[in-house]
Each structure stands twice: as structure tokens, then as C-alpha cells.
Image 1 (tube, one colour):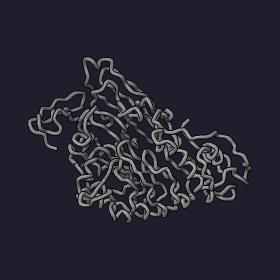
Image 2 (cartoon, one colour):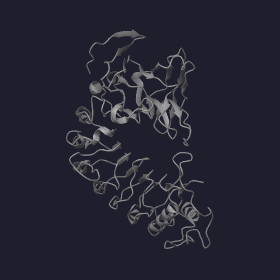
Image 3 (tube, one colour):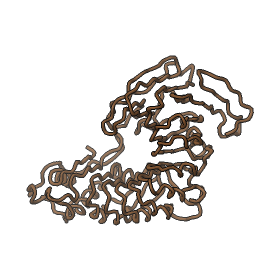
Image 4 (cartoon, helix red, strand yellow):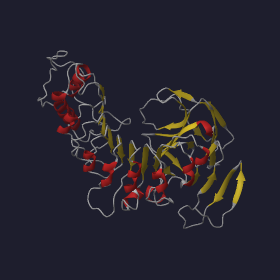
Length: 467
């Protein structure tokens, strides 16, 4: 990007450039050029990082192949230094600065080191935060759900040749701004990504909106890499054809792509009706996981039912964008993980096709059925039970619908998710390995918790529900 009439000056090896005057989409923005072993952010909020809402955590996380120390210069004369913490699940050493929303209910992770509050914010509202680290051993960078002022993010991909994951997700540009007109995150410069030869997982949300140099189109150079995981999203994808947005070109990664994640909707502007998916995505023969959120579908896209090799399907709605129908997904007999969550208008009658998912090990319908829809939660649990039980293996001799993690609870505190009726106790007539006590044709909706008790004790489910 070329800036006219710029002024440059150096501060602690970082270069700031003033951006163009009124009329430019980047008016008032600053550009930070990063040095090896550090990255910098502009902060104009009293807390950094600041979460985008109370239901999520705002975080900047780094992961390394070896134990190392991280120093954060908060830009107000204070610093903090922490050693990374080993994560046995990944074999990586992790560090993150995290600001948890007030309604976040997930556990605090041992590598989370809190956030910073600026005591001088009233008199000095603008700061530069710099994180110092060892780039040669860095494996992953992930920035999630943060509020930041408009700025360019000149990340040095060429200095991180061993990095395997780079993720930007849910970034909102300064408080109260519109994601339609100011939604590009830091106008990320991707030109030198080719030097990061180890990169296999790439997540870019809010990088393709109106102000971005990549407005509405995934750069082709990204799709020429052997990516195993690709995530993207922005409202900019609503106003292009699939050819112009390069959605059709994602199949160039078909030999390696395992996970595809969409945050926000995509749409071919020449196609009317419920937004579809590109028809050639059926060629993604190695795709195991498809995740989508903040979509504008009313029912799952029909193409998904043809990608029969999927093992993990997540369709998560939002406050303004939810599905009302379960659609037809009955061909997905290989699903082990199925999320249809945060769709607050979703039909409470469980679809009959769920009986086909005998390999299922995780089923999430959290925050679907709320107090504003009386009886919806109990209807869903009753119909789910009645669909699953005839296909489930009551004993350990089989595996169908056994050891499932089931979540029909809240996603944040006080989100209005309904409490199931009944009592979490053994129903009359229950006998281990012989009888459930509640028949699969029983339509009484007042015994939801008794049904969950049966699933927990007879079929070894782990059930999470609102209380």
C-alpha cells in the first residue's frame, strides 16, 4: 500500500507513519513495522487486550516448540516477563495474555497471564504494546476476539519460517465501529507469507472487508500452499461472485485441506435465495471438519449432505443470524462431532436422521432452546431420546451412541438457556443393561432430566445442561 505525503520517525526500532488525511478509509491509522523477535500493537482502550463482548475472552496467544520467556512492554513504562507453560495435549509451550469476559464460563488455562490496565489512560489514552519472543522457535500465533484501533499489521512472516499456525479471529476495529466499513484487521500484509514454508494452518477473519487491500477476495497466493487448515470470514464476501472472491479456488488445496472454517457468510452475488456453498467444494476429498458461524442460512446448505466423509460438523449461529431448520444431513454417517448450537429459533423437534450418526461422540445444541420459547428444551430432549434410543447399544458390547459428550446448556452466564424439566434421578422401571424405564415412544415432556440420567448411566454420556 502506498501512502502519499507521509512522515516517518523511529521510536525504539519501530517506525510509525501517519496515514492520509480525511476521505481515506485509513484516516487516523498508524503503521507499525515489526522487528525480528517482536510484534507491536496500537492500544487505545483502558484495558489491553480488550474482549469484544462479555461472553468471550480477548486474547493474544503464542506457542513454541521449546520452553522460553516472553516479555510484554505495555507502553506505559511497565513490563512483564513470563515463562511459557507446557501443554501436554499439543506438545507445545504456550503463553497468552487474556481478558476474560464477565460471562465467560470456561476454565482458566494455566498459560493465561491476564491483561493490563492503564493507570494513565485518562491523560494518555494511546499506547504501543510490544511483545518480545524468540521467533526461531515459535510455532503458533493466535489473536482472538480483541478490540483494537485501526492499524496496519506488518507481520514478518519471513522471520518465522518454523511457524505452522497463524490465526486472527473475531477482531473488532475500535469500540463502536462498523465491521462493514472498518472491519479489516490491521490491513495485514501477506506478501511475504511465501517465506513461511512450514505454515499449514491459516485463520484470517476481518481481513477482507471494505478497508482491506484484500477486500472480498482470498489472495491466490494463500491457496497455492499445502494448507491443512483454512479459516476466513468477513462481510466483504457477500458482494462478489465465487469466482471473484476465489471461493472456487479453495479446491486447489484439496490434496491437503482437512479443516475449513467460515466465520461470517459467503455468497455468490449472482445467485438468489438462501446462500449456497461453491459446488466444486465436493472435490475437497480430504476434508474432515467443516465449521461455520455467523451465517445467513435458514437451513444447512444441501451440499454438506454430499460431503459424506465429514467427521466433524459445526454450525453455530449468532444473535442476528440463526437457522430454523435442521435440513437434511442424513448422509453424514461418519460424523463423530456435530454442533448445531446458538441457533435460537431452531426447530425443537430432533431430526430423524440423527439416528444415522451411530459414530457420534460429541453433540452440542447449547443455547438453542431458551426461556423465550417455553417447552422447546423439553421437546428437543424428548424427541432426541426417542430418535437415539432405538439405534443405541445398551451394553458395552456395541459402540453406537455410547460415551457421547452432550451439551444443551449455556454458552455464557445468564444467556437465557432453559433448564430441563424433571429430576436427575433414576426413573421407575430402570434396570442396568436391561431396561431404561422410559420407553422410546414416550412423549411425556416433563421428564427431561430423567432421560438425561438414563443416557448418563445406561449409555455413559456426559451431559451438560442449565441448572
